[in-house]
Image 1 (cartoon, rainbow, N blue to C red):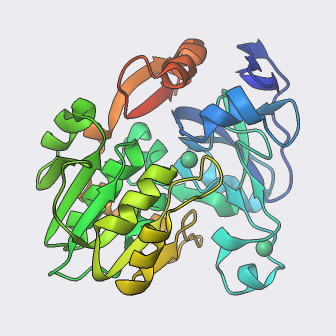
Image 2: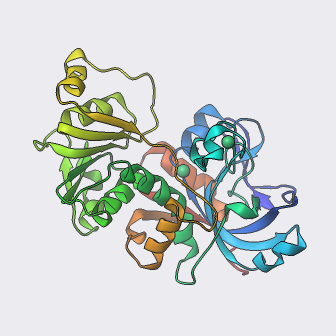
Image 3: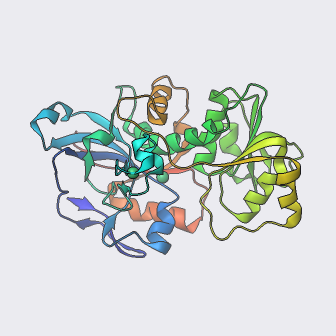
Length: 340
Ligand SMILES: [Zn+2]
Ligand SMILES: [Zn+2]
């Protein structure tokens, strides 16, 4: 089969690789759509994966093509989304069902082979069966949608809350949509330039403002960048008694001036972290909420996908994101187009 194994930092090609391993309790998913996460870019071009070679790609959907056990035969041919985290089920967090905080997890697409491939090996437990009206592309967006929902749920949004989203990445715009869906009074996406303003204009009820010109104070501020500048700004943008959720992956050490730090104290801000998303097979969790929202068209996924690339052109897709030569939102790769 064809895949893009990462052989060293920055070294990947469209290659013939062995078919993935099939173990008891696992299945093979024939990939149909795989989104590129912004975390894949440093993973591929800067930091590398936990070991080489590894196939990246953790935001994906497809069709179950093979199962190991007789009892799982019913899954063959099912259209599925996939929760990419494989928990240890042994640590304190796992025993409470908080798998996103597992201290000893495996991860499809970073610690083990993922979805920039024609086929990927997945535990049956991690499969989310799709309703017929959910497209493969929508389903490949379930992971970032679940991550952004998980972040927004930390706020416990009230109908009087004005919400700010600091950042203009795909997750930021997804979070903004969740803010509306969760009943916020207003949601404002704050960017450094107007390059993504058009995107906000395409999403009903979402405002856009330049972060350096914004005079408003907000009840809830989601930090969706991870830079010092964005974290400092988030603290300044929060109202007295406001809540801040930190979501952006930090790009380095965090520094803040004494004056900004004082604001956390004087405004008695609640600063929270968010990580990944909650999942439990066939139970109520972030992923089941995302699935329901997609079925009911509560989230506009189409506006979030800016580019599509065929499986032959994944390197171009990665380079588009790495170079920042043009604005993008979600960059989606399409797999196994002809058959199935
Ligand atoms: Zn991701
Ligand atoms: Zn665990």
